[in-house]
Length: 237
Image (cartoon, rainbow, N blue to C red; front, side):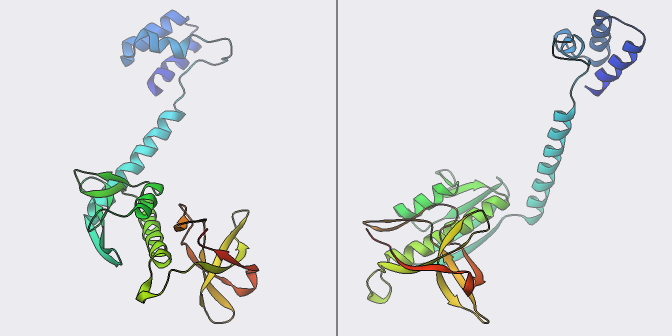
């Protein structure tokens, strides 16, 4: 398209008509007459001949970035780690050969885990025997969110050491820095009035807490003074 634009500018200076410019573009660039005419014959709303190359440049930059990402991925190679959970060892595998991040469970995940997987973009691949999505930073964060959701679900729905499942939790409101607030509970009290909190993002059901995607289970550190509106929140309906 840059070559076609160069032809248009040069022939415009010489006072060439549309037909001559189109013929020159076809002869020198290999574009069809129909395509060449789009850059030469002006519509009522157009004021300047030529082809827009901004979209092409953006696509080239996107492809270059993708190639660099793939090169880094293959340099790292396939990596995997196993994380022990109450449901058994879960393998998180960065499969560089097919550019997928995979989560491999010892058996069929329960309904809550499948829901967390789907909410975070993972889909079951029978050929791979794994739940997977594209391998990138977003995929790595998604795998981490799934593991947090699994841990939260186990902590609430299971009865560790024979104790009954927790039916309510003390929560607070705290600024989310996203234009709203989070509902959080204190996980750990740290030094100098700092606390580690856990975000509750979901709803209570008859079967227990139903975690929603993205934020539920996310933990972060904040100032104790930033916690307001203390209350008891039920985890079961």
